[in-house]
Length: 359
Image 1 (cartoon, rainbow, N blue to C red):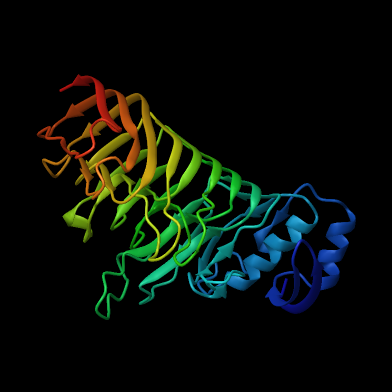
Image 2: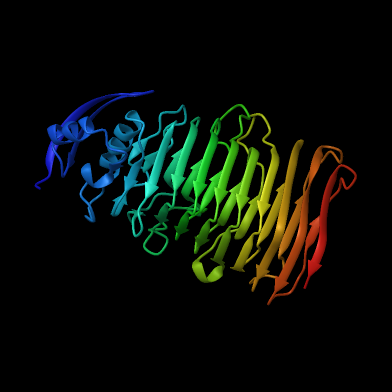
């Protein structure tokens, strides 16, 4: 069916007037809606497998499906622009697809979102900020690392597959596949410039597969209640034009200047596997805050490309300022030199402990 241009006025927790081109007309969408479908397909709103950018069309379809309280299904290969839409926040962050409260986003087998080649120092394919009750099922997100235009005088290390920002809670991400981002596969923390520490809460990420990203597989910068189960993170090394810290898991509470300090609490990382990652587990602690992270199951570090498999650095001025700890229940190291480098000034307040080591 020929793509037609149509306009719809959507009433939702937000209000949007949408004009878009898609394979179905407005009347066809209305006809489908009367049948109360159990899900809405992306191809009803956008051109399936087209090489043109489909960012706004996908957002309109996702918002419409969410207004009907049914899942939105990515059912093909769609190209998106990581800065095509201003996010509705004070910072006006931009993203390809803005996640909404009380929604489900599903990817069919073979479906994916591909970030179009760009020269942005930062971009995000999926972003959650101040939203609740979001389910993301089997997302496949592909960045532009190979074709990116690294222009200007910065590192271009802020291109994310999925960003989960301030105020978000009850977010479940199942079986994500994320590749070739210019920054992190997943970033969990505060949107840069936010004043208050309102960390993401009750975040669940299961069976993530992240590879060939330039900075970190997963960055944890602010959280209270985060569980990451069975992540496999591979190929973060100089071979793939990486930038520091080049970690599988980077535990690094951060915030912009003159704002409340971020903390990381109640974080569990279960059965991590890191393969050919330069510095698999990194943490950098500064200023007064709490950091609580526990690695459960077996943490497998395989063929690291650096001797600094675990690098934990405490750079606090006040030796009693940091509380909490990083505990690794079972650490298995294969194919590389084991050289943990904990440098802590406040050992009485912050604990770093590897209970069992198999090397």
